[in-house]
Image (tube, rainbow, N blue to C red; front, side, top):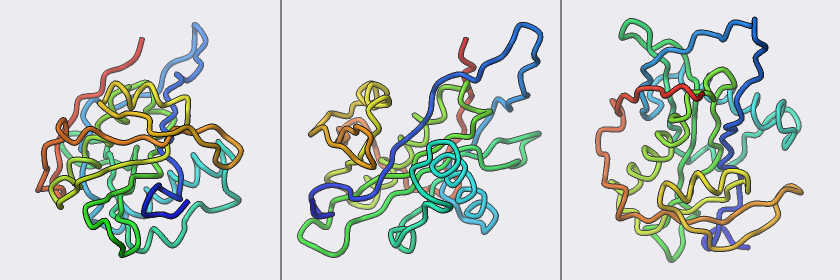
Length: 204
C-alpha cells in the first residue's frame, strides 16, 4: 500500500505489561516527573535511537541490529525525559512523526516507533503522553489526518485516546491495526521544544 494512504513503517508499539517482581524484590526507582518534548539535543536523539533498538531489535526481534530507515531523515523525534531535581536525566520514551513523501495530501501525518523503557512501563501514562505530543504537534503544523500502524495488543489504549481502527493488517508477521486519531481531541501544541510535564502514575 502506498505511503500516502497508509503508514508503511511500523510501529506504534508501547509495551504495557508490568515487569515481574517477586515478593522480596525491590522495584527500581522511577522518577515521578517526565518532560515530553521534541528532541532538540544530540544526546536526546542518540538515546532515543538506542531505546528504539532495545525495544524493536532486542526485545521484539522485529529488526536485525537497527530499526532506522530512510524516514528518520525527515521525521521529527519526540522524547520523554525522566527528571531528577528539575534536571533532565535520560530518555525513557520516544516516538517519531513525519509526513509522507510529497504527494496530494499535504495535511497527512504519520506516527511510528513508539517505545517506552522497560523500567518505566509501570508508569502507565508515558505512552499516552507521547501520543498526545505527537498528534498535537502535527495539529499545530496543519495536520488534517493523523494515522499509524498499531500492534494489536495496543489498539485498546489508542481507542481510549480517541483513535479508531480503519483496517486490520499483518506486518512483520504480527497483527496490526491501521488507526486514525480524532483530531478534535488533540489541540495544537506549538512549543514542542519545551513541551509539557507529566506525573507518572505507577500501576498497581
